[in-house]
Length: 516
Image (cartoon, rainbow, N blue to C red; front, side):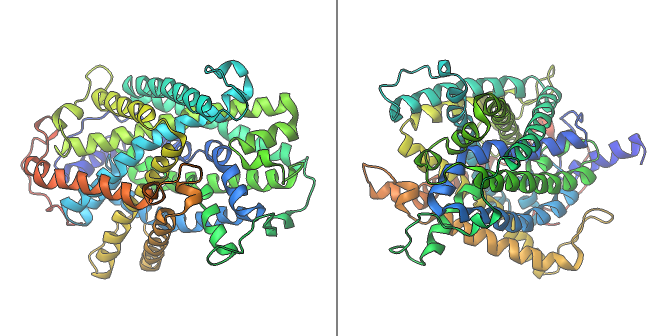
């Protein structure tokens, strides 16, 4: 296909939504792949949550990694068909708009947007687990003792706020700059991940059968025995392996997105699974002492790496982890901006016409970038308490899995009615579409319930104990979604319509919203 034909085709993709091209197409196939894999960010997620998995399920928690991969693969395959059919910014929001009612689409977009903003803050907080390990000077707030969680939490908020200021500026100054920094960071992260796998492999002290060991986990008083403990330990993998849809959210800024986005989604998920799984496996096999309490506390994998590789080798890897955290925050922020832009372009957010304004110099929605950054920083300081922030971070993951369900369920209904047709000549599951879609819905529903289940060890692990914290995984999503949808229904839906600055200039008839 010639450049002219490809440009015409790319334009027609957003034409059917009633939009005219507003964003600059400057991203290649590696940039879209980098966006997906940096959102997942194996070095960020595995280093941030290894301690929780090991402490909750013992070495056998490793099996949650391939299990979550298989489940998320079902979701990703559905997303690949949608990315090829509707390559448009704010993918989840716009996909749902074509699959079902505009009201459900708004709810899907709102769910994903609020969860993404919380995720920016949560990812940025990961710096606290790594930077002070590299140099004590990064602990700006003096600590009275090694267990001074208050000083650690405040210091983490300061580091996170500085990172969000950086991601806000980069995302505001241009998509190409963001993509270049992100691609360079991902390249470093991938090289470091492979290096870490090799270094851990040559230092193993036990065989792979260790992943059959539940360690010292006492599941005698728990419902379902060890299976109940494993469901909790799964959080360490569930909290990592999502965000692969980011590759499709950049569709309006990518070349040939119908072809590149599905490939980027699958590659991001596969490489994350492969590299992350090997890192976790060899870390468990090489740990000097798996019963060491330091491995089951915050920064557990950082401690293990320093134990195994020594201060010099460990520090080199931790520098790569810091880079991974930075590009992960950058990618999450970028995805949130595209979603806010997509919703505000339809005037489906307060001050929509302002939020979707494209800066003529940078070619990006600068106002949306700054607004999301400010909200994320405010959230950091409002939820300063580590106990409260654990709840808020957890419900963000619940809401992301809920947002995914708001896509896969309408898609399944379309399939059952015989109304779903993949784009001809593009990615298609063919006869596997229905069983894969069913598995995606079952997986998403089960994991959403698992994540929201009111467990003390997740939502209220330390004193003071409060019932509303334990039920936070149910109450907070309910409040956020309920209040948000009530506002939409009573106020915003009456204002919905493509903002004039982004409306296509022709008056051709397009398929009604809800028609594929």
